[in-house]
Length: 186
Length: 288
Image (tube, rainbow over all chains, first blue to last red):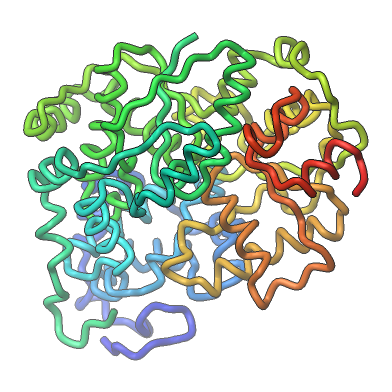
């Protein structure tokens, strides 16, 4: 399949050859937490219509992403920068007539994408920050002196417990992964 | 009434005027916040990397609250609130998942028991304290002040994790609290629009377009202030007013809901609520 980019933020996907599609991809997604209801989708487009991100950025079209995933465009979906554009607002989730739970589904697709080495840098950084500071921001004396002026108690940022916990998960391995496939794009 | 105060990253490090105002309002209402330096990040950003890491980070914080011996964990950031509430519910209801996460938590000497309730401070004010009780504390009603509310997303959605306490398509709790403060709640076009803070590091351009639309809608409607109750929404609507693509005739003050309530309850605007003098004067006096 061509890897050239079309105007919709996903690698050019058509016309396609059914034999080359990964028909197990929809099952893989439905086994991932959040992705359970993907096959309920009948492509009505309510999600795309209400999406505040799609309204401003045509690269993000949840209906199209779900359709491509169900058809089996595994590599195209997982390597697409568009999957990281969901703002997790749940506008689609509360309106979806088929209870696809699209916000959770997008997170499931992102998680699989991360395992394949495509994690967005901002989320790799999130884990780095949590390992360093236990927060995603650094606390210094400056913040504490300003907090004190407003009568807020001092905060300390000993990351030991968070570090130990994260070390017991797969996160540190996953954020080091790079895409395996050739022609993979960031 | 005692509750563990879960602040999270953005409230405690970037937007502690929100925390200060919440503390001041809580004091008026005899709510005791118990603090702990064992709390950390709620785990929000770990989800797209690894589901177990995400659950474990959230669960660890819930365990800290459980270990403090309180029944209630008060949360001020909507993203933290949505996240922690979701994980709390999942681990309370799903025994298999609870056992699995407890295996991970063992490494840090914690165990999820499922004994605390988690609530966003706004929900707690509207639901547990109630409008009648709040009204009794109002000494300086903000008469004639037009305040629009931004509910944000993770405060009410998905509704099933929040016991359906509020209709996500027609929410009213913030407007009710604005009205309690004596101000006039104002509706505006596309009120439910997301702040797009979650994708600021993915596509700043898209986020700015989304923020600009809300700010322009607010300007067209004519408001004296925008009320928010999430530090990230505050960053988006406050800091991004300075962005070159946002062209407002004059700045729109963005205030946290407890700052508005605190003003009406007679708290010190600068020392207790962290509100700029000029803004406080405008809201208290009705005009500049």
